[in-house]
Image (cartoon, rainbow, N blue to C red; front, side):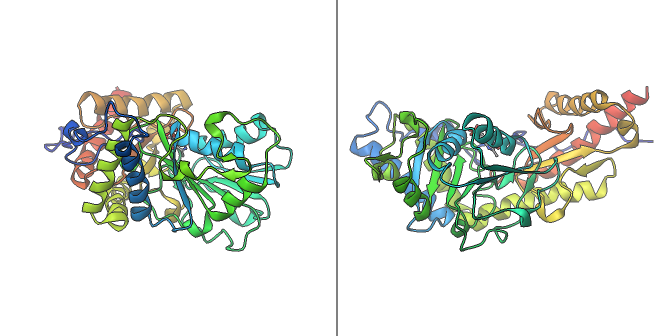
Length: 389
Ligand SMILES: Cc1ncc(COP(=O)(O)O)c(C=O)c1O
C-alpha cells in the first residue's frame, strides 16, 4: 500500500524557481523605501548607490582589487553578449556547452558572429565535456553552473594560470552560492535575479586586467551598438566600472540588489551563502538517495549543482512511457504541487530532459526544502496511482 496522505508540513515559502529566484527571507517592499526614485542616476545620490552596489559585490564575492566590475543592461545575457561581441575574434575560441544556455552562446559565436576559428566542446545533459581537451591558447567561453542541467564545473583547476587566451565565464547561477575562482577567469557575468533573489534587467560584468588589455588593443571587425561599447578612443571607459552606467538603470532594482547584498553580509557573507545552498541541495540529494523513483540528472556527484538541482524520474512504470508520456507525468507532478501551493516553477527547463528542477540557492530556507520533500513523494504516488488506473 502506498501512502497518499498529504504531509502535515508545508513550505512556508513555495518559491523554488530557478530565476527570478526567491527573495531573501523576510523581504518586503519596505526594503525599497530608500530607493533614489525620481532622481537622476547621475546625481550624487544615484551614483553613490550604484557605486555601493559595485563595492559590496567586490567585498562579498572577493573580487580582486585590479578587476573591474560594471553594471550593464539586459541582465546576464547582456553582460555575456557585451563580452563576446567586444572581445572575441582576436584568436581562436573554444566554446564549451552542456546545456541550453551554454548552447545559446555557441549559437552566438558560430551563427551570429560567424567566427571561423571556433571549436565546440559539447556534452549531453547530465555530463560535462572533457575539460582536459580545452585549448587555453584559444579564448574559452563556458558556463560555470549549467542552470538547465544542474551540472557545474567542480572548480577552476582545469584552467591554467598562464593561459594565453581569455576565459569568459557565464556564472549567473553560481556566484554567491559557489566559489568561483576569479584569478582563473578573465570575464565573469551574472544577473541579480539568481542567487540573491534580486530583480531581472541588470547584469554584472567583471573584467580581469587581461580582458581590459584586450579591449584596449583589439578592435572587432564588426560594428558594436552603443549598449556594448566599453572603450572610447582605444581606452576603457572607466566610468562604467564606478557606476556611470551606459544607459539608465532602474534605481528600484539597484535598491533591491543593495538590500540583498546587505542581507548576504548578515548570513556570513560568501561562506554563509555557500553553506545555505549546500544545506538546501543536501536535503534534495538525501531525498534522492532514499527514494528509488528519482535520480539526479547530473551523473557525477562533484559536478552536481547546489543551486539548480535537476532530477529525473526513473520509476519503471514511468520509464516505460514514451518521451511525451514521461514529460506529461513530470508536468502532472509539477502542477499538482503548484495547485497545492507548496512549490512553484519546479518543472525542468523547456529544452532539457523532462523531470524536475528545484532551486536550492541561498535565499531558500532549508526548512522549506525539507518540507517540500514529503510533498514530492505525495505528488509522485498520486500521479503513479492515476497511471496505474
Ligand atoms: C546559465 C545562464 N545563463 C544565462 C541566463 C540568462 O539570464 P538573464 O535572463 O538574466 O539574462 C540564465 C538564466 O536562467 C542562465 O541560467
